[in-house]
Length: 132
Image (cartoon, rainbow, N blue to C red):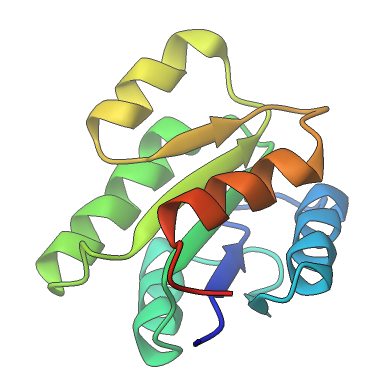
């Protein structure tokens, strides 16, 4: 069985990546292959990395409040590059009112602060039962 490959990305000008690193480590500990982009990535950099690394999923972590500008651009670029099959989920400081809008553009799940990492792991495993 192939390992699940997940890109953890920090779009925009966020300078805080503790949550992204916690999730990345938890996914690694759960047996997934994790690629972490580091801070201050553009939507284009994230999409290019996801395609180059042949990932199954992208986890977007944001605290800056720019999610309604950056996330739609990432989804647009994925579609434009025929990579809409890559599952996208998000986490960070995202107001509840924005969650339905993000789901409409294709973000599969939004995890808010305090979500146990097991919930993220279980979500990914449920979406990719054929991967470890």
